[in-house]
Length: 360
Image (tube, rainbow, N blue to C red; front, top):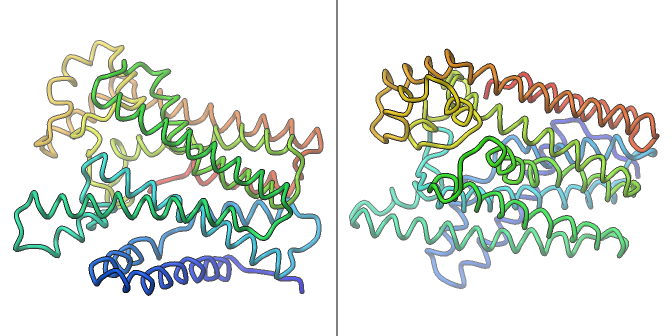
């Protein structure tokens, strides 16, 4: 049977698969105690209801790459893989929150913050240790679930092996990027622009863009040449996305993007914005308060203005434009070579437009 899904239907079906996974795990966790079951329940509250950017990307491109309409079996199989991409994303978020010491995400308690708030009678250190430990362990479980989900995909052996190889590369590269990001934050490696850009590409592009795009190509049976081009496209899209994220954190409207205003400046986060500012005469004035956890809104706004005056904002916006232009160039070459269809190109260009116009 051929299936035609609207965007709403697609989101509902992906969400249903994710909800089923958490329901099954919560039920199984009951055997190991109420606290373990409560952990899975809390995880479901935080993992469900998101934008589903990555699984939607996979499904949109798969539909564009497939000459014939997807059958119900093909759709169900692809949605299952897409749902495990989302589980991988949540696993990385949990580990990232532990590394960064964050208790909130999108202006509400993250999983760690929620677990801490449920133990008001304990000391702060004990509750925090409980929350962080739980996040690490749950992240490990979700990571293993993603791997097993790919391994169990109902696919021809060759395609399943390609998927697993892709996942292995993705996890390795993402962890390498996170490791480099910590090294930058702790001053272990020099915070030059080239290193920062390479770190951003590894940390964000690998699993947020390259993974879903290449997975769609594998599921569709596309040639390896298409995979290679989508790897390049995903790398450019991912870096543009991360650079845009950095811009929003400093120059964006927090009422729209929902993040803690100027959190990157308080954390002393080494971004392309800061790397450029270091090379200007404005840096001594910016450096005075950069990385101070008690940075006031007024002082942060003044720092933002100096970053704008020194040209850092314009420079990074230019980098975003360069990455998106590179996407168009690779796409044009792929379409000319016949390895990516015009429909696939439209999906990719829609992603690029969404990144360019991001306000949150």
